[in-house]
Length: 569
Ligand SMILES: [Zn+2]
Image (cartoon, rainbow, N blue to C red; front, side):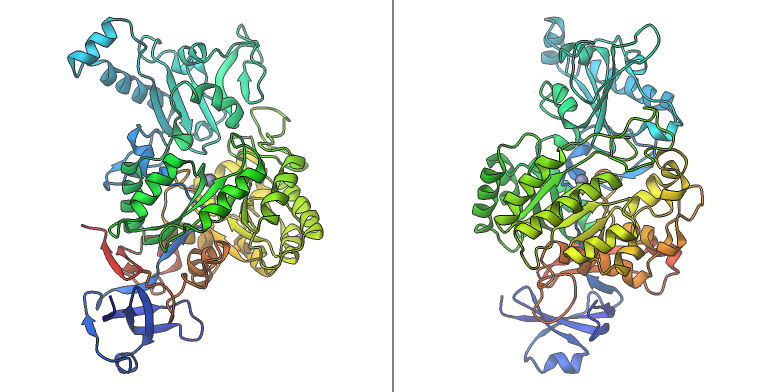
């Protein structure tokens, strides 16, 4: 299309400091031709005036710098989370507020699975074929005080013969019942780190059904065709993700763990090659557990870069050092965990630091941008140490390497990151979803007040993005920005008021800030001449609402490379 469309709007917030607001934007060939008032745009020649957004507010399309496309496909399984949650169709599933409610919900699902829906199912059952496993997701026992889930809870579901797999919200842990432990061959003799065992009572030494981190979870996942975050991407799941992105104003989203195997690529190319798919996808190659050799991985990603299109971008690599703080599997510096059910035990190295440094160097020398998962401060420190040495051996300007989560990074570590040119994509949704638990249980009050220290990052000159890690928490960048602005927990506590961002700073972090970490800031993240015509279309102006209501700004839909997507269609 070479025609020019001019959109009028109640207000356009551009994120371009040279021209912060405007009333009109002209779009040609999927890009922004001009921004300003109608008279200025008319100088570009004939155009069609489109007034459908005349009473709406336009912002740059939101950029989610750390999420997973499984946000769409996890809804194939029942949701067991503590918070109410909206599914791709817009239905809100109520949260489950006690361990008993979780077990009762599982019993209902088991009963539904038993009810013969076809003669084939009944015959299969009668012939003694293995029962289909019950897989569910979104669970987190930390909301139930100190009580952890064990086989004792799950073995009471149904007659105890159906294998049950419960993926935790954080993606790092799962719980299974005795039938699943048996089917997977996990016993008292299993010596794999992360296979948790009863440490007292009559069952001391027996596996208790909790599995931490990929090596332990894989023992089960290989028997159920994968589940939770590690399940394969489906076409339908990707479409569901697109629906969520549209109603949350997101036009560019990462998939921050993707094997990029042929099957994954076929699904991605199918969706992103369709003009009606509403989101640009930036998948990151899974460069840890389960992949073979950094040199081969780097070669694979480099070859894929040549096949990038506007809406499917290759070039990111994801590495992983530790686990999750609320799962007590993150690596913490002294003084360690505050009130851990595991006592004084530290978390798990998903990748040993020496291996991380060697693999990081291989991907870095191949010219790729590496995003490293580091939740605990010991893991963040290990990454900064390793990257400092790699950059001394192999300097490379403007690498945009990014620490992902970085939840416990303090001012001195941000100063080192700033000096090294490292970006931070902080997990501000934790302030709401686990802020009280971090204060009371995982790290205690002192460190909880510097949780996701956005202000310290900016003060140190560190390029800042903020994220949801969906499906760990819901994809909703305005909510993520609200967390960074208000830093409030469900109990009403404000964690570290000195770290609060302004609304303008938080909105920058979910647009230009995230685009910067993806090295796409020359193309997206602001509304200015030459960039892709990506807009978040809102009913409400986030700058007119009180900061405490930022999350409630209503979203109409999006525009992606000039194509309009309404959330209600
Ligand atoms: Zn993630």
